[in-house]
Length: 190
Image (cartoon, rainbow, N blue to C red):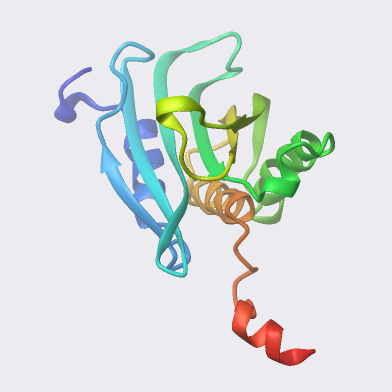
């Protein structure tokens, strides 16, 4: 990594956009060390998503900058995202979930007017059941989303908000301004 005083203006503007965007209150962001071998300049954030006080999803968003650009990036900036979330057991085997999860990303970026190109990624669904000496809680299911895209400008706050919206979707949070009914309220509603 180059010294901070030598950071190109495009990179510093892109970092400023990531630092100034404010996600919904149930998504906690923290600056972390960026990978050093992927590009000459990097910046990274980690996220924790809370639902009813419990961590239900997390992720990382990494901004890469190479002033010389990359042909595969189709630009000089690249955003790399990772999201992991717990799944409800009945969703774990849903063959449509991967396609739906991918639209969470593209829809969220589009809804926040985050211009992008060269988008790609993978969606992985896993289930785990413990046996023998490791026997324990009921089977668990997880969703992992890995994606990267090239922002079409150095204005990155919309990209952060889109990524946070995708985190919220993966975590099963209600849309902003909507309060989910608790199980207790649902039971009493019948």
